[in-house]
Image (spheres, rainbow, N blue to C red):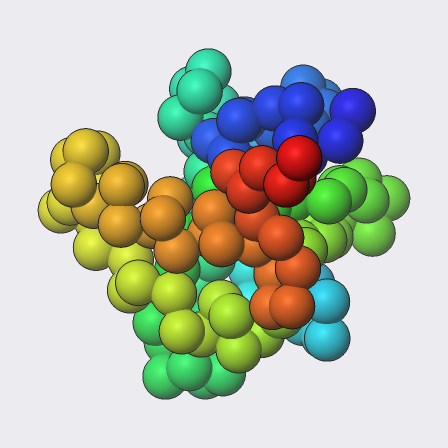
Length: 126
């Protein structure tokens, strides 16, 4: 199933929604940290990535829809964003993670899609 066929907050593969805590996270241009938290709420799933020293121990929320695939053997989650795109995303705030305004901000950021590509909400011109 392609990303345009699912929501930004849904896993492309329902099996991806199993417990991913502790898995390494690979951006399109290298490792960015480990999964600190993963949720499996229909239409509202995400992972929280602890970036460790890479961006001074900051965390980032990534909607489940940016996950390309999960390698269970190597315990890695591959996302379709670059390190810089993740670094520039809104900082994770655990106190606000369940509030609509915060999720709207994170969702708007990631809906733009990978740099140089069209986001999932773009419509083809007629």
